[in-house]
Length: 190
Image 1 (cartoon, one colour):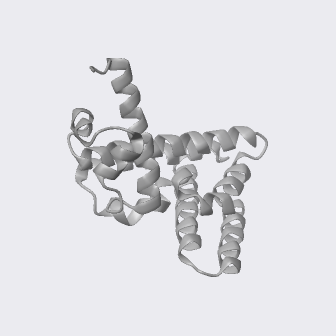
Image 2 (cartoon, rainbow, N blue to C red; image 1 turned 90 degrees about the vertical axis):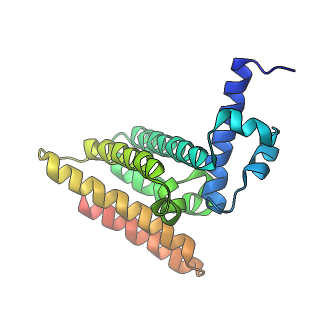
């Protein structure tokens, strides 16, 4: 039975979304194409009609994840209209964000994997990070674009690094302490 263009597009979108989630949970090496396609309810052979290679899937899944991350930052900012940076800090530096890597920050989940990825993946990731930093800088008060960008970079780095640390430690109280300290640091620095 022939698959329509519309169904092929829907299948591709399903695989990309699933790949983005599974990569964040298990890393690039922890996800096989066969297992991913099986979970998506599709054939392994169908993968190569949609993607050139696993590296192509990784690149596109990272790009999708970073677009979703940007949308998450923007949604948090909109929800906290009066204090958008506090809303972002509270949302991104939370136990929920820490405990559900599949729904969270692509960089916090995959940073070491991405640093070893192919140049096209790193380029996509760079674009995604630039978009998030630009969005954050627009929320930071002040007139100097350079200072606003510097604060946005520091804020993003604090969020990513803190989430990575909270996932690495095995003491819940230390994890909570890291989240609290990071939130305070972000609010003191903006």
